[in-house]
Length: 275
Image (cartoon, rainbow, N blue to C red):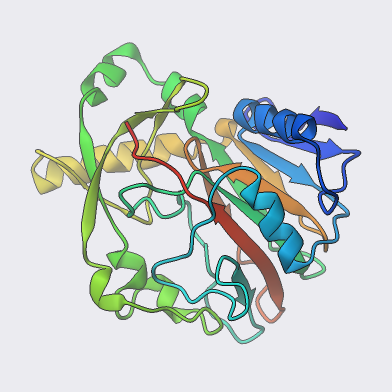
């Protein structure tokens, strides 16, 4: 197994390993260490059945099911992320961190490419440790101790963005308006580094600030979280796998393939309460 760093900000491609095999504890440990160091890992030329993808994900923790999107009928842990040729939006379009509207957001996501367009459909990733580290000490001090509200409402209430994707069967819209509170800066439980923890899709406000103050501060933070210097971009092929750390990464599924079909399979690993 070889690990090839992709950019100065984040990302590494791993070669020489077949993820469909029964991996040794040593190999899993190497992948976990690379995951904590590089934040998003990429593998190419993989051939996974749903059972094999689930088994790989379970090597890193208990798998989650999505509270607002129907999973695969045979494998509820799997979310089939499908964009059809007549879709006008895609699932996952826009910068976000997965399911921050949960009290214990998912640790990470593992996405497998089943069918991709000939061009387009790349995914962008942004390192939130780097976004935090690049801020001035004075601004870090301003954010220290602040908390933000997160809600699924903008995406999954009736008429929300993600409900407009034809193949993604959403559910429980009456529960989407609920909100949770997380720190604006969270500390990664494994590498001990601090990261910005707000995102455009699910963060709805800063606790204790007037609405106009909250809006202004979030605008600054959203720009900071996705600066080009903190990003990498992945070109998908059938059989590609991306595994990213939701505790330190935002991502953005590009929708520049209108009229084409794209089918991905995702499993997510349960996480802990951000602190």
